[in-house]
Image (spheres, rainbow, N blue to C red):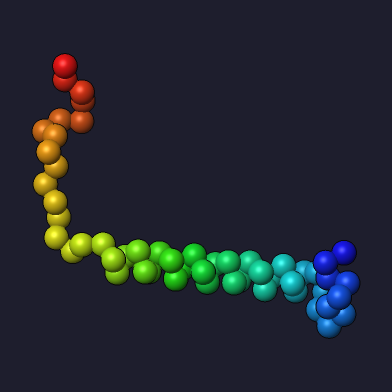
Length: 53
C-alpha cells in the first residue's frame, strides 16, 4: 500500500493533499494561459460557420 510508508497521515489525508495539489496546478495553468492570450479580438476569415462548396 502506498500510504503504509507514511504512518503520520491516513489515506484520506493523502488523497486530499494530492487532489489539492492537482487543483492548485490546474488553477495555475489556467491563469498562465490567460496571461499568454492576446487581449485584442481577431476577426475570423470565414463569414459563416457552414462549409460552402
